[in-house]
Amino acid sequence: MLATSLHWRGFLTPLLTVALVGVLGCNDDSTTPDPSEAPEIPPVSTFLIDFSDFTQEGVARPSESMTTLNWGHAGFAALVWNTFITIGMAVPVATFVESFNHVPVEMDDGSWLWSYSVTAGSQVYRAKLYGTLGGTGSTWRMYISKDGVYEDFLWYTGEADLLLTQGGWILNRSPEEPNPLIEITWHRDLQQGTGDIRYTNVEEGNAENGGYIFWGTTTGETYGAFYDVYNKSADNHTEAEWDPVNRDGRVQDPNHFGDTVWHCWDTDLQDTLCP
Image (spheres, rainbow, N blue to C red):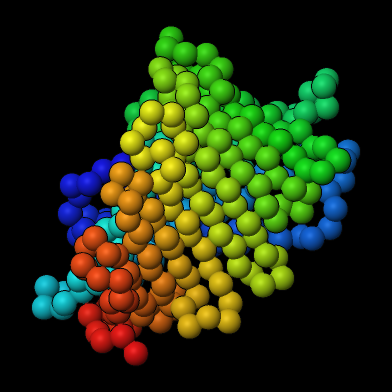
């Protein structure tokens, strides 16, 4: 997908520490927003996937004596996207997470501006997040500057409905290549406490254009969480389902396993026969 040679054990070490909330996110008030106040920024969970179920923070590290090939492969497939999101898009991620720590100012055109600086790696960036509340929802524009390099680059835009139950983002690749790269769509069910988020590669001319990762939580199912990773160039799906509490689950990957059946792991993450 975005990388193909990473060893699966690498996903046990987090690539970036961010203040992630769950798939549902925060601020679940279902009341209609006050048009005289600043729009509420969509939760972090609408921008970032929480990969912690496949990192050392999510579960205890398996010992060398354990056979965890099925759980390991499920984590490896997620790692490819995790690597891209936390490293390849480190600046957009850092600026979005930091926005929640600042108070906006109303502009003359009725929009609201969150303005602040953030450090990503060893570099300092200046961010301007504009939010505008309309009759059906809110729209968002993030401009990022790096002194002496680029000024007010529109790195990503977004939109959300009034109750923050659905929306999306478009992320551009970089100031050097200002073309759309990733489309994010998300949904949140405030009553059920579930949600989903999909990253899709939309870059024209990219061999992975159309590839995606679809991640979410459900109720009334054997497993409460799932993902579907589509590798466009290989025309292959890796699908996983797992219990976020008990940690057991299953994975399916025709190219990797050579079949279309589920391959399971138990609550200790060890390979087991599927029920």
